[in-house]
Image 1 (spheres, rainbow, N blue to C red):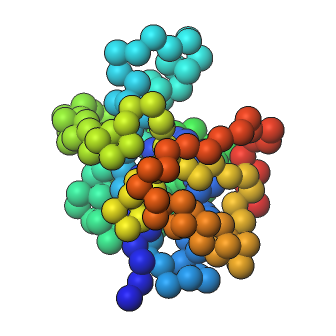
Image 2: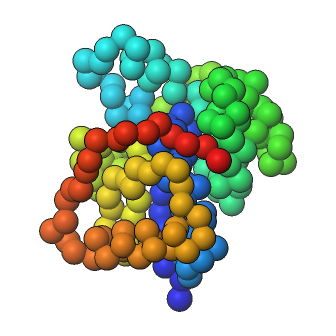
Length: 199
């Protein structure tokens, strides 16, 4: 029976993007099914004192998360494809997290481009906040995205660059599962020395 790897992402986060590419690679080499879910760094950081640059980034993150949530709610079976299309544009492609980019990603995966309108309104933000509450309940509010759940254990990360491929991806997964199997495990960390390497 396949193991489910659940991954929560904010579309604007390049580290979540890297982890998502690893997760999809894991599914090729291990008996793993990947399930994507939306979270929101903007919601996570509401009410916090942030430097001007990061606050501007958070302000720009709302649109993509809102559109991804609309896809998750209305076309859940297409969320992974939409995230791949949108993330490819934003991260390796360098496109802005804007309505035009959202519309192009929606069209690419055969979804109604009208869903992009969700990015321009706060009408569904309570649902986005509810998604973030669930993530925070699982891992706390001291971490961002990605968040992964496997076998009932949720952890932030892994933060990786570049995303490993083939059996390298499988070995990293094996280690991650082993770490997750111990309920008293909380943290491993070292300073990042590279930016996201998109390949």
